[in-house]
Image (cartoon, one colour):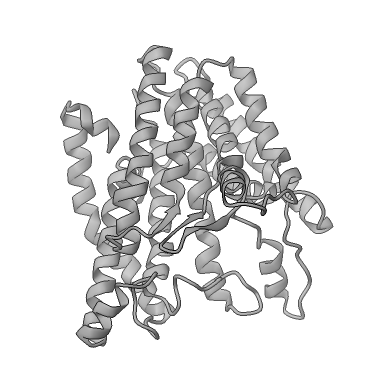
Length: 386
């Protein structure tokens, strides 16, 4: 990116820190890998909110990835296209190798989860061509993809491995058993994430130097408020835009939780309205945030991929060492043969999860700060890919 926008780095940094909370829960909470923390029949308010707040991470990160592409204004369209294409391939490679191993510690690679890094990479590969389309076409494509993709919810192809895999890659979360020793879990299908990246790309126009800051803040504020209002107006009807219906409970708190409990895999229209609306409002207000707290989060926002990779390995390594401490060596080694690689009964309370989260974030701060300084002062070509 040719220019750093502090409010964008701040928002990205905040969601990266929130992301660590979700991954701390995954690696350290009781049944963290398998629990559905937003299942209202089997959750607590704190567990629900611990998971729910992390819903902002993927939409914001993918959205701002598109914005970063637009802000590479010091390059020609051809140069941007080539760079985005190569970066997309690099992210796909990382997802299938370095990230996959960080999640599972599985040298045999018999289980592959196509995660958020995968879909960002795939979207970038496609964006190498989308860049050549006129701005209004990209904007319209983004709006249509995000707004109308739920029309595909009832479409499925379950009559063969190949058909199922292709459809899952496009628009359906799913586990596909390729063979007795290898399966693919599509966590992030392409649609509607490609639309989210397109909209993020179009947002970049508001940050051109000749664009009024006052007008930018107004557009961001009213767009964000519009998304929130649209969510509030559409959600009560349990109709279009969200496959999971909400209902009233005897507890008012659980009724509210049900109202905001939307579908992430793939992200429903209401899920995206619920998460992107407040994010746009935040961007409209964040340009005036210049304090030490903002600077703290900006450090993470400027080295997101570096932070993503090292926090995953740190969390999983500490979790593995923890199993050695609390279980026998034989149990620990035996658990490495399973997915996830933890002994039965492993896990701790949410208090431990939050403690791990805080410690992880603060331990990695000086490392990320050093890398941010190194990246901003060095000109090595590979720094733009990490």
